[in-house]
Image 1: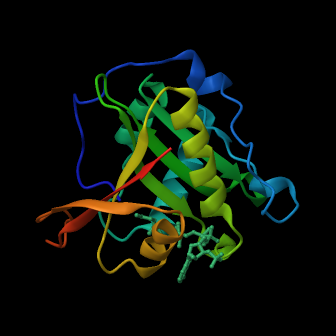
Image 2: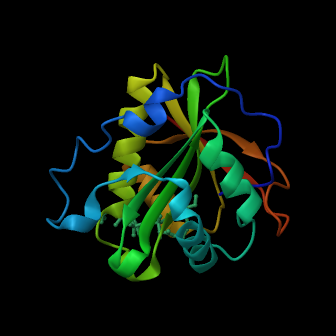
Length: 182
Ligand SMILES: CC(C)(COP(=O)(O)OP(=O)(O)OC[C@H]1O[C@@H](n2cnc3c(N)ncnc32)[C@H](O)[C@@H]1OP(=O)(O)O)[C@@H](O)C(=O)NCCC(=O)NCCS
C-alpha cells in the first residue's frame, strides 16, 4: 500500500492514544482464539514487522528505517496481531496529519497462512475505532487496481473511491484512493 517514503509529512496530533487506546471492540464476527485481537506495536516488534512485510509485499515495502521512525512517531499508530512463536499474523500502519480530518491506512498486511480468518477485518475495525476515538471523520487508503483481495475487502467494508493517483506504485501502476466515513 505505501507508495513512497512520506518523509517530513507526519506531525503529531496525539501521543498517549498510541499506546493506551483500547483497540478491539468489534470482534463479534471473529473466530475465537488468542490471535485475533489487535494491539499497539512496540519497538520490540521491529524484526517481526519486517518479516511480515517481506512475506506480504513484492514491492513498495516499508524498510527498517521507516518502521523504526514510525514506531517512535506520535502521529503513527502501528497495530499488530500476534501469531505463533513470536511472529506476527497481521499488521496495520495508520498515519495522521495535523489539520487532516482523515486517518490514513498506510499499510495492511496479513500473514499468508493466516488469511481468510477475518484478521484484516479485525484490523480495519480497530482502525475505525481509533479514528473515532481520535476525532477523525474518515479512513483513507490507496489500493493497487490488481489487488483483488484488498479491493474486495475494502468494498465489503464500505469504502468508496475518491480519486485515482497516477503512477503511484513502483510498477508504474495507478492507485485507487478510497475513503470510508467513520
Ligand atoms: C488483503 C488482505 C489484507 C486480506 O486479509 P485477510 O485477513 O485474508 O482478510 P479477511 O479474512 O479479513 O477478509 C475480509 C473480506 O475481504 C475479502 N477478501 C479477503 N481475501 C479475499 C480474496 N482472496 N478474494 C476475494 N475477497 C477477499 C472478502 O470480502 C472477505 O470477507 P468474507 O470472508 O466475509 O467474504 C491480505 O490478503 C493481505 O495481506 N494481502 C497482501 C498485502 C495487501 O495486499 N495488503 C493490502 C494493501 S492495500
